[in-house]
Amino acid sequence: MGLNESTFRAVNEQIEELGERFDASTTEFVCECADAACTARVPVPLDAYEKIRADPGRFLVVAGHQRADAERVVEDHGDYLVVQKFGEAGEVAESNDPRR
Image (cartoon, rainbow, N blue to C red; front, top):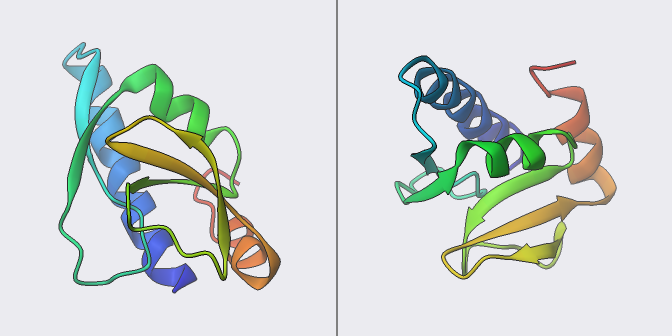
C-alpha cells in the first residue's frame, strides 16, 4: 500500500515540476491512494499541492479513496482530500519521501 502511494507521489512530483515549468497555477494531479488500479485525476492549485507535500505523511486523494485503517482526513476540499498517514503507513510514507 505505502509503496503504491509513494509511486503516485513520485508521478505527481514530475507533474508539479512540469506545471511550474509552464507557469500553470493549477494542474491535474493523480490520486495518491492505495489502489494500484486508480487512474483518478484531480485539478489542484500548485501552491496547494506544495503545501500538502511539505509534510511527508500527507497525501492527496480523491474523495472516497481514503482508508480509515491507515490515514485520517485532515483537509476536505470537495473534489479532493488531504490525508495524514499514521502507524506503519506513516513510517513507510516518510521513509519513501523523494524529498528526503
